[in-house]
Each structure stands twice: as structure tokens, then as C-alpha cells.
Length: 191
Image (cartoon, rainbow, N blue to C red; front, top):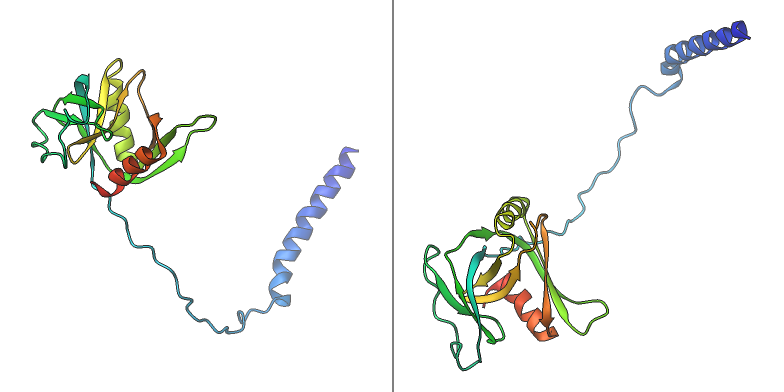
């Protein structure tokens, strides 16, 4: 039995060697026939620029009415190193915020309906570097609240129960379709 298997192995090696030697004789070595090559138009999508999104620690959150929040457009935000008092999108809360902790480089933001709920959420994606920085930052903020701020408006304020890693975040709460779309638009375009 062993002799038969050894003979089969030797025949397989000899057959492979012969095929490698004889194959060039049977194959066209002049190369493939010339072909007509024409360039096909390609669609290019223009690069979308989304301004960096400020993340600030929440020092205090207060219930507010639209009248208590700044009527009309919010005042210009202070420099990143200074604290900020800002209202949320719906002007139902006023936040006292610390200086900017980090800036996230976003790549997209869209609103969506939460499954099995009447409420909506916002999906935002960021580049890999921002995802890493945000994970490190939230690791130091467990048990605290942070706010995502665009143009002096708090788009969302999240309580951090554990470090948040990855390049995608979902903002949710009791957002209506209109509020979620406003937040997604402000994330992408500003006010």
C-alpha cells in the first residue's frame, strides 16, 4: 500500500514538471491581440466639508422656556477656551457648558425613525481619528454629561454611562421628525 502511494506521488511530481516544461509550447507567447481601449466617463462626487463639531462638558442643565432662551438667532459663541451658556434646538433647556473639550471631524449626519417608537434619532459618523479621541474623552467622563454644540446651540446633551468608541454615534431622545432633521442639518451645514 505504501509503495503504491509513493508511486502515485512520484507520478504526480513528474506530471507537474512535464506540464510546466511543455505548456509554453502550446500557449500563444506573442501576447494577447491588441484591443480597443476607450476611457469611460467616471462620475466624481464633490468632497463634502462638514465643519468640526464642538464637544463641551455640561456643568449645569436647567429647564427653560422659549422666552428664556435667546429669541431669534443665538449670539456668537465665545472662543473655544471659554465657558458657554446655550439653549437646545427646541429652546426647552439652558446649558452651562465648560470650554471646548474636543472637536469632532464628522463625515455624515442623517435623521431616522426609531424602531417601535414614535420618536426619531440622528446618526452621525466621524473620521477614525475623531472616533479614537471621542472614545478616550468619554472614558474620562463616565457619570457626567457632554454636549454637542454647533454655532452656539446645544444639538444634544448625552449622559456618559461608559466609554463610547467607534466612528458612529446615534443621538436619540424624544426628538420629533422635525427636531431630528434640524439637528442632522445643523450637524452637516451649521445653522
